[in-house]
Image (cartoon, rainbow, N blue to C red; front, side):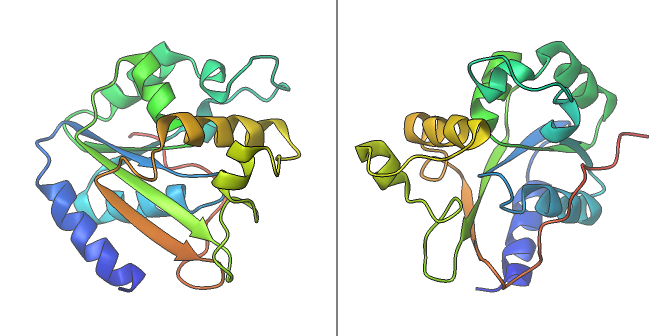
Amino acid sequence: MTYADELVQLVALCRQCRAPAVVAIDGFSGAGKTTLAQHLAEATSGRCVDLDDLVPDTPPTVPSYADLIDAADLRRRIAACGAAITFVSGVCLRDVLDAAGVAVALRIYVKRLSEVGLWHDGLNLEDVESGAAMPSHWLGACDLAYHSRQRPHERSDFVIERVEGRGPAPQRGGCAPPA
């Protein structure tokens, strides 16, 4: 199935959500979550909230990525989207939305694969869980611990597998703020 085919299916699923609704788009860093959120928001006249826009510029001094996000600010941004479907994208998303008390209507997972089938920067989650491999940076470690605990790639309503070099490349920068 092509990315365009998956978009058609996702747009239909999103339109079944009763607005105002939150659609969560989860995945490892660089998977294409923000790009997908932008495409879906455009197709459904929805709005986007990207967790990257809520992370402070200072180096992390907290144990997990979810602890970086101001839950009240996230709730305000979602409320500012009004009656639209709000597409919230980010890493460790279940933890963040749970901490903020945000109900989710639809969960989408974007799985980025290398051309040889490895995911998350060439690491397999199973290798990390067994101790055979470890990420080299803080966010990668948080992201992998989250995946091991929450299993969002197994517990989502829809999973997109994006192979590096095929399909739309992820764009840098967050979703447009609510008007």
